[in-house]
Image (cartoon, rainbow, N blue to C red; front, side):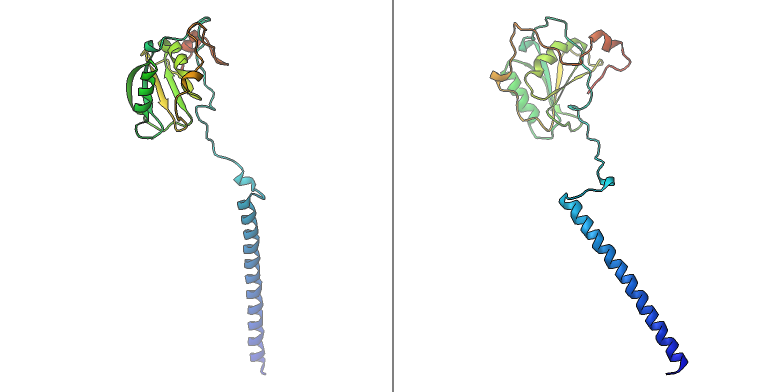
Length: 204
């Protein structure tokens, strides 16, 4: 074999060795990635940069400030509570059906329709300074609903916005309102005068 042939053969061997190393590294990386991926998928392990969750704050978890009722405030007679029912769950006919159910219980039905956006959880009751006891009275009818005070809501009616977690009103025998027993204030409530004196008196 001539010197030129030997040089060519050496170059071919060197090239083959490099290719073998490169392919070996690629296969090793793929194998390790596959093992890690399988472990993450099955929950056996987790990666730090995947462990941070997205923020999913909803009305039921957000800090909500609502006005306290004066001591001794009794539930409002149902026919004196005007309720506007809005569908924030995206389920066809939900506002109409719920409005009819409230009417059957003695509430006065105002407007019904679709809400401007989808609302999570059971929903919310939006009310203003002139409808605080009405809102608390209605809240006993809807399990998990969030009270949402809006100082700009000057209408004496209350808005019931039904959320994706709403299924039905509380059973009549489970409502637990006694016309002769004062309504209870929620933990963390604030005097109405204090809320109205703050720059932003809206919650939820």
